[in-house]
Amino acid sequence: MRNQASEEQIMQNSTLTKEPTELNEPALDILEEGLLHKVMLLFHLPTRLPAMLVVLLALVLAGLAGAAWSLITNDGPMAQLVAVLLVLFMAADMTLLLTLPQQKVSFGPWKAQLFVLAAPRLAATLGVALIAPWLNGNWSLWLFLAIQVFGTAAFIRGYFIEPFKLKLTAVMAFTDRLPLGTEPIKVLHISDLHVERLTQREARVLELAREAKPDLIVISGDYVNLSYNRDPETLRQVRHLLSQLSAPYGVFATLGSPPVDLRETVVPIFDGLNITLLRHGWQQLNLGNGRRFTVMGMDCSHDLPVDAGRLARLVAAAPHDAPQLLVYHSPELMTEAIEHQIDLYVCGHTHGGQVRLPLIGPIFTSSQLGRRFVMGLYRYGRTTLYVSRGIGLEGLSAPRVRFLCPPEMTLFTIMSNGG
Image (cartoon, rainbow, N blue to C red; front, side, top):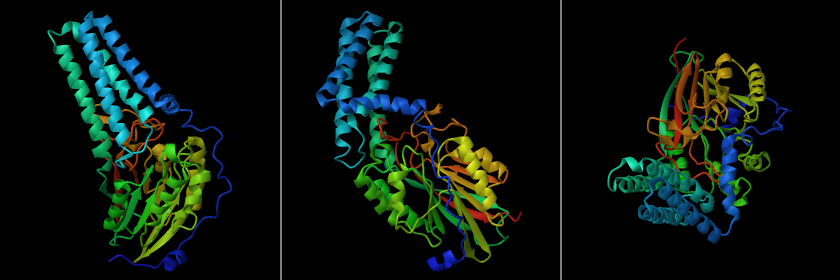
């Protein structure tokens, strides 16, 4: 049976570091200087345009694709048909995008997403045109249609189905810092909520949290969507969501990427909540029956030398006589976690790539380590790392889709291996 300690008993058996003096983020934001963020900003530009001009630009792109087909294949009638079909597929994309907020599926800017989705459609069209001279009869047209229909099917799956297939992943972790034969410790990890507006997905988060019955809950940042991180209604809804999380030994949280979890808007969310926001701090819990557990949490700046130094000071200050859990938004400190012999390191940030292709894997990870630690379980020495696929979706112009990469929460059962 779990030791059902009261909140007062938990705090009496806890130690919290003094609030650090160096909470200022580095002047240069690593993510905003990255190529992925700049591409997202480029595709976000159409949001400033009138809707009719956006439609006109889409028609122009379809016409240019048809013209390119004609030049490559020297088949004018086929090129005209391809251009018309491309317009129809893009019109279907636009119609579906416009329905997403009404159906409470997602709330991103449709104008920007239309052009992001148009990019692979146009690229596929040109690719088919290049091989069309080697195809007999109408095979080039059928290949074009097959690819575009597949794109629409992937669109429907990516927007309407997979983002809501949230599941609980069970992971076993072992440590010699727990007395042999003691009851396991259950930790629920939540990452990358990225709330725009509350949907069925967030309701599922609360349902799974109740079903898991963890000893404690940890949350590794990115609470709001990048497009809504100053929106008062979003901030209010995130606070309401977080207020409903509870566990016998507490809920602990850290901040995510600076461009997403704006410190001036997200930190106040936690005021008055029964959640401990760890900003370069630690807390040791006494779970009874000889079980103690140390939770360490840090802000994430993505400036690796800065964060590595912060981690070294945090580990030096925290006790080493109990299992140590590091809660940090990104997997980018895994090398340092191994050096410090941290037992369990939980993070998110990569979303597992969010869009994964067969054989290829993730298209982007937004991690400075690339694909090295993109999702799932990694064990090196005494350190276990788990990179969560997260729950929510990227913001700005990024399509609110998941493909072959469903959202997840993670329940860790931490057991003694007896040394």
